[in-house]
Length: 177
Image (cartoon, rainbow, N blue to C red; front, side, top):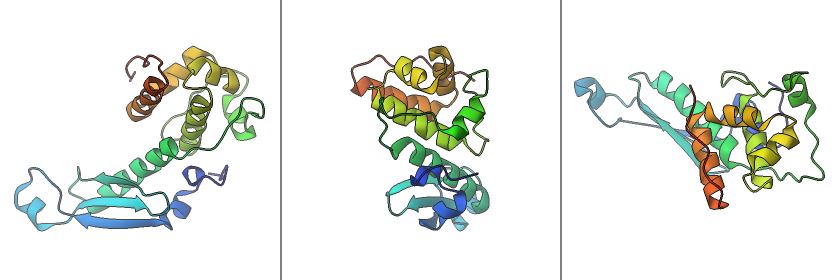
């Protein structure tokens, strides 16, 4: 993936890892002897921003490390803002290429650019006071398409709804699978 900005949310995984601190600990909950003997749960913290994420659902520390890093990078995309203005905004070339001629925002969470798209969408929503229609217009997609994109990720939808409620707007409907 090409780094699209100086914002840490857009950095490569390797660059983010250079600034992270890892901790292993014994996970909570059931699991018997195996759970009580191994420190398979992990917490990763991006030191400059203070954003952290944990994972303890796997008995494998390696699996928990992957899950924690995914969660950390999503939280960074949600919480680290870049200032966007309506007047000076131009759709980034990398996103224009992704949208193509169909002008549909359809990016899988497995896509390397997903976190950059999430970050840009949240930046636009922040700049528009939480208005999905204004943000969709800035992206050049339909409001329905943007709402559908937001509803496909529960954590993203929850974050956007908190933003909208803070701006005295109604929350969007539930997540779609």
